[in-house]
Image (cartoon, rainbow, N blue to C red):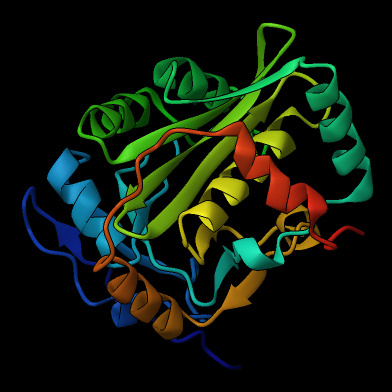
Length: 255
């Protein structure tokens, strides 16, 4: 009878302790591929240090803080974003009728709380626990976390929040209360990234929805190297201009 090889011990982080190298994350033969460490704290310096190394927190109620660095990594290149024809038509109609407004950082707490009520694809519960809401709200106040809001007819209908370090954007979660509202927020983020020369958006999780929009898997070592170089660039000013729509609406990348 064959025996399952023992799982490597998972490092436990004390507050302020540095992360282990991402190459030490659990692999395909382990119970949770990509899991790097547990413990630590969700304060601003720790979160900034994590994202700068291609690491993100993700855990459920009753678990300690779990830190991940998946291999491969799901990413979206703004230049390859697929603006499907149906979404293009919806955008053009809303803009023509002056019913759509995209706002950045208008109400971060409201956005992340709405995201907390929206399970990730393939999951039944939320991973955005109250401690995460508080942590990313502090990160927002520090100027590192941002939100994109879709307002239609004067109502907040969808949005997303993300982390930004230098020339790198790390997408976190989206919500939608109206058809296509979260996709519009993502399209706005893509348009913003194109306008500011940001060439990669981290999506963390491999989902069919992201793949349909142009997302792809990237080896972790290439991803970490990209992050390292992107951190050398200045962070953009988070303000959305309606002019950003022009290039994305005229490009021939629909499906």
